[in-house]
Image 1 (cartoon, rainbow, N blue to C red):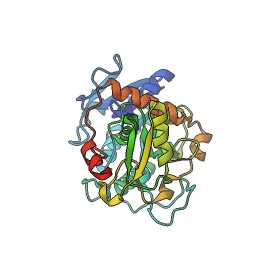
Image 2: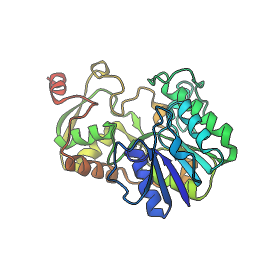
Image 3: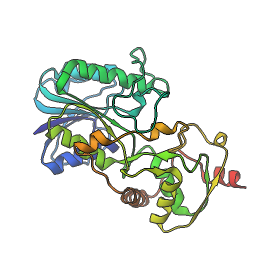
Length: 314
């Protein structure tokens, strides 16, 4: 089976390519060639740039499926589809839970939950536009490919090589031990899917040539934010004390802190029925801890700095 991956050397894309190669798929990578050039030796690489609309490298060739990891605005998707035409079988688009309406949603919501209105008139992505732009991308893929379209909507993804610093913040903080400032209710539910589980789902959907929309959320057993941080400490062999602090003291989108709890309680039933695995959260945490230490624990962009936390804790 020949697949084309639009993007694929960073976090989620990297996991998908690794799983595809393990499965025996013939992978072609399309991207700017600026990162991860040492990865996947022997894999065909086509150079282009979605931001500038350079898809010339895709004008020839045929693939059984394309995985769109790096489509964020409708122009990205539209230009890719125009370049590829009917020279691909299935188009699998990596979307987001940001497509969903934020109100009127209860625990256990599934893939039929109402989405936000699509947005097509901007490429400036922020909290207000990211989800609606993904909605427009989903609609365009479905309109063009019909039953040959597959949409995967991941929740928060964790694992080695994560460039978002989200789960990594709590893994590293818990590994330091001591009093931990928590600007949230420790009973808040969280959903973190292992990047390798997401990748396994994507590849299985391609192999099965399966259409539809699928949540990629984890872990299989519900967990709270406090429970997750305690798990991080247990894996690292440290002791911690969670100290609630005012949410107003934290910057927006603090790692894994969300006031709308039902958005962290979405159903994974449909995806699990077709192949989404469930890596234990302890395994994900241990692998993130080992990876972070191996890379030298560079400064994180999210969460409290050590100095900020000391001031909050007094």
